[in-house]
Image (cartoon, rainbow, N blue to C red; front, side, top):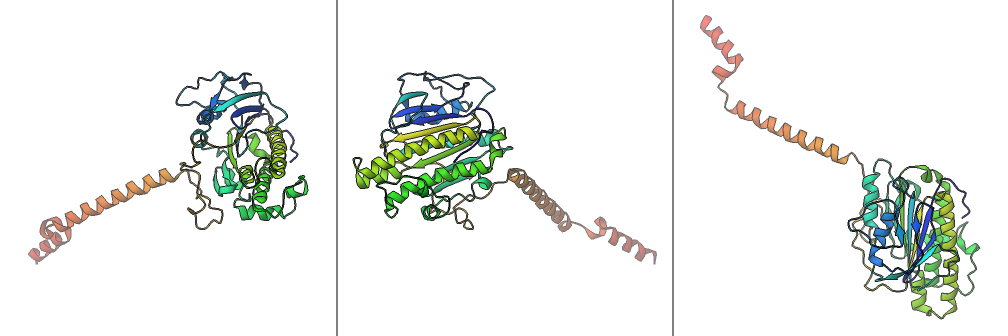
Length: 350
């Protein structure tokens, strides 16, 4: 995951178990150091503001100052890590307490990106490997079509060339345990995302902001199975902290200091995690039977125009047929038809 810088300005944010930690930020995104708490349900609004979008309700939080009007990050990456109350991330700009850690999504931000930059087809990727949820929009359909989605695919990826198993110090983690494989699979997804972005560097050069939302629950499974005092949990926590730090640095370099990356670490959510999004797809509800990855159909932006043309043309033709049929039914052949009129005149002349 060694990337070179491509374009200017990226911005990284991290939320660590009941805290929001800013890892890196460009100069035009100003975070102030302090202990101002931020609510978990306000994180989507915070993401929208850092990307330069407006929100419905004002966010009265002094941790983020208003930035330049004509400068915005080119990407936002939100990584939600469940099952850990803190991660030892070595570098950070500022840290804030996180209160009311309730489940949240970036669907509102995704809708804003899609509505404002529909013609530029920005990348929108939402992925939760443990629950096999995937949603892709715009250029993500082409860039991440080879990304392993289901746990079976990701575990098969671990046995292929370029797997993270060859470079990670597993220590007490096992390659055969189910919970350990789940955690390693999520690490593999992070590695593959940066590898695909490295292969498609043109994404960092367009004018539309990209949005990524990833949810990792491998640590939560390890904590439930082994306990937080177990060597497996400690080794996994150290590995994930190192991987996320490297992941942030790689994306930072790839987008050339013009992206937003958040890492949300929450030990437990206050309510059961449920998804009410219209965009994130459940793996059991196959919307596209022809796709093994449960992907949505590719949306054609001319659909509304074509639909209206066909609809009103059909209505006009139906009305025309009704009018012609009515007139034919009520026509008097002796007066209304030129054929009968000419025939009658010829008979009288004869």
